[in-house]
Structures are given as structure tokens and as C-alpha cells.
Image 1 (cartoon, rainbow, N blue to C red):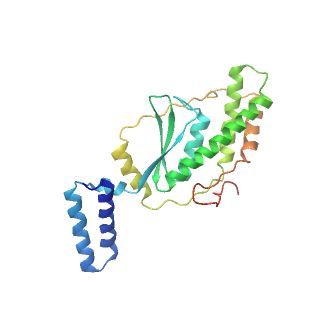
Image 2 (cartoon, one colour):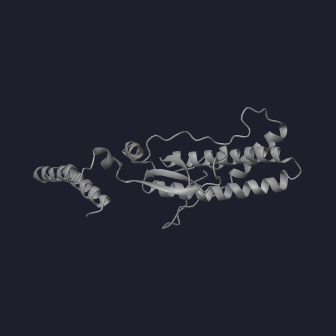
Image 3 (cartoon, rainbow, N blue to C red):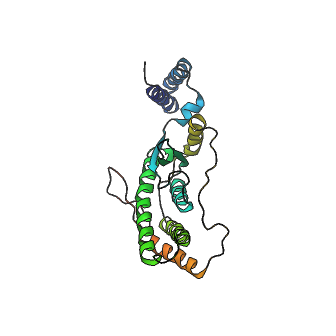
Length: 230
């Protein structure tokens, strides 16, 4: 039995031929596409979702990610025209799932992994040099402020190729088929509703300054950098 992805690819090629071929050739291609769809029970939604892929990147969290990490994943997903899902396995390993028209999903996941490593390194350095002698609660909270500002600065000028016109509808079809009924993600925001002190402001300022030094390079198969800063 033919692989379903191969069948969908055959149908897609027939539809492309129906759009671009001569009158008789186009009509024959369209009939063949319709025949294959009926024979293999392939829906219009399934065809629309063809070409959408999913790529995962490991989260730094186990159950509930911090707001700054969620912001990083969200900004990258938005830049590459992807939908974003947070998943958790039975082995207490969590991942961010980037859903987009290939190869955008792959580059988005790669970009998240690269920037998350840099964000964690910058965060550790800030804690070690600036937050050594304060109590743990304030240390973590101020480190979060640093990290949130780092993410904002690092992603401020993130540039990615414009998604194709059909991308949004294709991703919606894919989500309808593969991820119906998703809930809302509850992130950890340790600074929600708090009035910032002068030291909180300093942490935010330091994060923004450090985030401007972030670097991002394209993944496998290319040495060309993805533009991160202007």
C-alpha cells in the first residue's frame, strides 16, 4: 500500500498540472486528482495541510515554562510564520513544537535552540556577577526580568523570509487535523503585578544591553547568517 504522504504528493502534482497545463492536459490532471482523492479518502483539508511540518526544540522547563522562555519561543514562531505548541512527555521532558510550512518550522526550532542557549548563559552570568548576595526569591525574580529584557532585545530585529500566501490557511488546516482542542499555556510570571524597585529596573536594563549581543546563524546546509541585528 502506498504511503499516504506519497499519495498526497501525487494529488498535489496533479493539481499543479491542472493549474498550469494546456486545456485538455489540465482537465485530465484534475480528473486524476479527484479520482485519487476519492479512492484514498483524502479531504480538501488534508490537501491544504500538505507541506506543513512540525519541528521540536527542547524546553528549559519541565512543566510550566517561565514567561521569558515563552516569549522567546513566541517571538521566533511569529517571525517565521509558525504556530507554537508546548508539549510535555511522561518522562518529564518538555518541548516547544514549531508548526509551519517547511523549512520555516525547522529553522524556527533551530533558532530557538541557539538563542535559548545564549539566553541561559547570559542569565547564569548575570546571577553569578550581580545577584550573588540576595535571597533566592528575589534572585530568581530579577533574573527573570533580566531574561525577559534579553529576549526582547535579542529578537528586536529578527528577520525571516516572508511565508507564502497559503501558509496561514495550510497551518490552520494542519492544526485542525492534528491538534484540535488545544488548551491555554500557563506560564510562570514571577513579576506579575509587582511594583519594580530601582534594582529591578537595573536588572531589566542589563538584560536589554546583553541581549543586543545575541548571534544567530542559519542551520544545516548554509553558512549564511540569519539577520538578527541591523
